[in-house]
Image 1 (tube, rainbow over the protein chains, first blue to last red):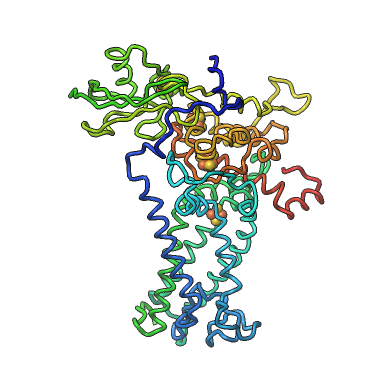
Image 2: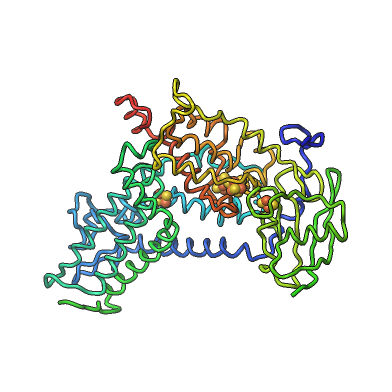
Length: 272
Length: 251
Ligand code: SF4
Ligand code: SF4
Ligand code: FES
Ligand code: FES
């Protein structure tokens, strides 16, 4: 079909679009999901920041529960018992969180995560706030240039996150042996649940999907990696769920350890 | 039960246009395209609308209903309240020709910018042999009916006309991914995905996936895997080094 003069996208002047006046014609509550996302992310960020700098009640000494927000604790400033890997680092000034070796990487991992990118591009940066709702920005270059082109380093954060998840797993296992030897309490269940979901989140990562097999052109020549890729792909479809679930379990775990170690509640014991 | 539905339809051409209100009879089981046809038959014989199959398979009847990009023939009237005003407008991202019909030639231009399937040298048609597991990823993308709803929704060009030059849109980035993942395609498409087709503009906000009537996981299965391939090539020193040392070209 012949296009009317001047309306082909590569011609100038600007083509005639059909009455683009209102920002959107959507009649549903399109603003609700971005609002909820912002509130959810803000709640986590505020909680995590406060807790990371508090330096109290992160280690329940009696049952050996360590909150993930203080793991690994490698400094002389850590309370006795909480350092599962020794204290190669001396005292730390108060403005440096005790888990300063893991927190920046975890932050980087989540900030560059393909799901969180979607979440905050939509809710905070409003590019776009919702589908078919105009964004407020004059110009848009996406992830083509600095600083957003740096999102491409996501895979390196993934590798570090693997190591940190291993450390969290080790912490959760050690928690089965308290001051009185082996025992199981509600705290163990909480720590374990958190670790399981952290693994789900970490392994469902798109970069993980890519390195396990996504980058191959011929699955048939790499049957093992194809199987791995298939499993990771299954997890990957629920990556968003795991992203939110883990924010929830991280807060829950930390809160539980906080309450137990401060003496506000007693750990519910099942065995010993 | 039949009832008079309130329809608000954009009418106009390249010079001007406006929303006009109509009352059109709606019957049980009908879709928005049925009402547009009834409107055409009873009140506005010159109303322009593109359609063909009425079965969600030809991709012709793309438009926007209450601001959401949709196929008119797959949008059931039953999702609206009987007294709700239903606004039908042409796709916003493309220049309008008349009423609900837009000029979608942008998409054909972008399609032509992608080099076609390139088999290995010496392999003749008829000699292609492929394993099912190797082609299944590409097969998902071949479900595309070229309705261009994803292109219409993508904010990169919907909100920024100037980006049309450098951005091919989700449908065509998916085409690049389809060929890149094809076991017999030997063309190198990764660099072009970023430089020529503008993959970096996509910020993976998934609106293309949300509107695709074929339910193709455009973002998760085509765009993000392509971004990872670009990262291999451009932004990953370790992969780059590995490729140099082992003289491999990406398995
Ligand atoms: S995911 Fe990317 S291509 Fe799809 S609509 Fe969003 S920005 Fe456009
Ligand atoms: S990918 Fe989906 S939305 Fe895009 S043109 Fe094809 S069928 Fe339509
Ligand atoms: S962690 Fe979300 S994509 Fe990698
Ligand atoms: S008329 Fe063919 S898809 Fe709607």
